[in-house]
Image 1 (cartoon, rainbow, N blue to C red):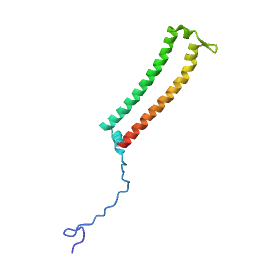
Image 2 (spheres, rainbow, N blue to C red):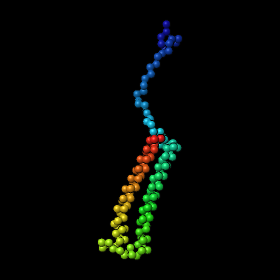
Image 3 (spheres, helix red, strand yellow):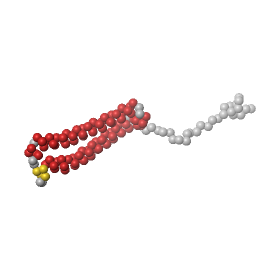
Image 4 (spheres, one colour):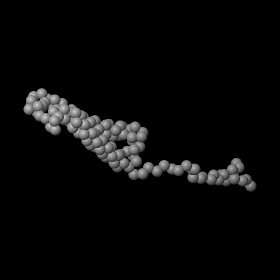
Length: 130
């Protein structure tokens, strides 16, 4: 009589065990993150979309502040009544350009950052849904 694994005998039993590492499970919506990580065409398209939205926001904010700050000297140059006005003993142009512009810039920067973060959160939600 022949034993297991010997020629002519029954095949040798092989014990199959589970691997020592954890299997990675992709949760629903992990496809978008995988596309970003693996730099697929879809991931590239999503990143370009986020960059385009952020660029449009930056252009709008710069155009708004550039227009407002650029218009002030023009108003002072073409409307002499505004240039000659005094508020609390200070000329209005000095007050506007030297004092009041900075809180406006800070407020605009805060609003810009909030909107940029909102765009990023919407992007993350989009990636998690796909």
